[in-house]
Length: 112
Length: 113
Image (tube, rainbow over all chains, first blue to last red; front, side):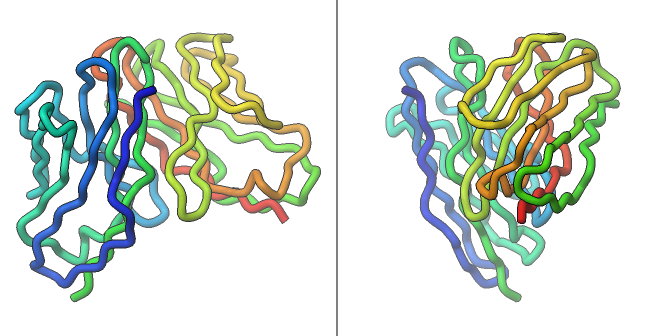
């Protein structure tokens, strides 16, 4: 079945470091892909999305490119801030399945 | 604009007691509604989703149930809580059709003691 796999956390970085959180997916069709962010004690918020191959989603300095050939949607940011500390979830939506499928989440901790 | 409300924010309940968590959505009609559970250190587990009043799909068999008595109201219940029911419960909504972008409530932290 459809699934999403994220890199294990927690990821600990110093402020202004480069961030990559890996995400790969398995799907029988052509899903839309999402990154959600969960700040401590809160619900999830949509961070960015991409709906077709080679699309790049971007928001708040974060970027992710839909790579169909490698079935990946890695999240990147050039310079992280302490305020980026959160749990990040990769997810896919497959129209025929009708549900959002989440990865297990990756915790990011940014130290000053 | 649309908003989603969950309450209570925090709940401590003894084992064997009943549970009722409520979620309401404002500013939209006929949304898809979802209940998720997030156990400590784990990802999101979809528990129930609903595409309309009285229509509930269960993803995981357990001692929880869900109901949708009104278009924008979604209730998660249990008759007798277990220790393993502890976790962070999140309600979400999405527009029918489209990309299924889901919008989440602030969550309820449930501790069963």
